Amino acid sequence: MSAATAEFEAAFILHARPYQETSQILEVLANEHGRVGMVARGARRPASRWRSVLQPFQAVRLSWGGRGSLQTLRAAEATSPEASLQGMALMGAYYLNELILNFVRRGDPHPGLFMAYAQALDELRLGGDPEPALRRFELGLLAEVGYGLNLDHDVLNDVALDPQRNYEYRIEHGPVPAEAGQGVLVLSGLTLLAISRGELSDPGVLQSAKRLLRGVLAHYLDGRTLRTRQVLASMRRTPVVPQPS
Image (cartoon, rainbow, N blue to C red; front, side, top):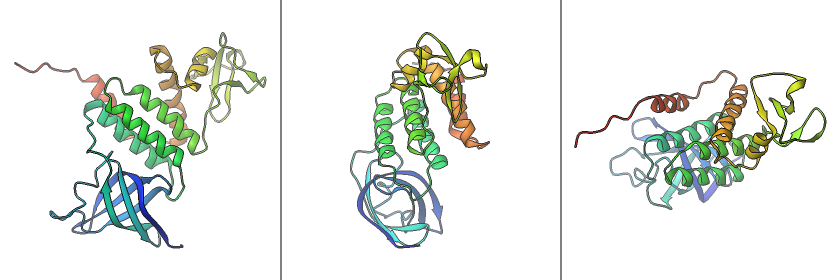
């Protein structure tokens, strides 16, 4: 494999795991190079200048080089304050990372995905319901990796969707009139068109988008389980207990 190099490229840390006694193996989403695996030598030492920089969800600039599937980190600097994410927003951000690790191969450039990820993090930091940001990111991710959804065209009749009709969404194909086949993923044309425009403020549209995207993602995950999704579901089921004053 040919040598690769980057100089202070904008990036986010997706995942880090211990390596040997004092180092880490990082999975990174970089603006120009896409997903990159690299070794951060000495990053776990107490005095390492990288300890506070190589944190999830923090915008950084990284320099690296080397041959093979794992690059060697050479420099790292933070370009924004440490991310402030808590609760559902924090788990939502980890969910984004898990999606990328499952769908994006190392070495495939995805500048559009990098921008979508940064925007999703910004939305999550605002607080409120994280679901719209997660759904928009899922749509963008699928489009970037070649699984983009047709949400505005009747593939059976080769015409634009009728907002007043119901459609069955057939994964890997698109919407067909519901009369031509009933299935789990039946949505109105109005809802599909709203999802295609990213208009998710209506609770019914948002819930339909979640149902549709869950089915599509499950199809392409092919049996793989997203652990963060299970944690998010558990957090939603757990009631908030008021703290004594």
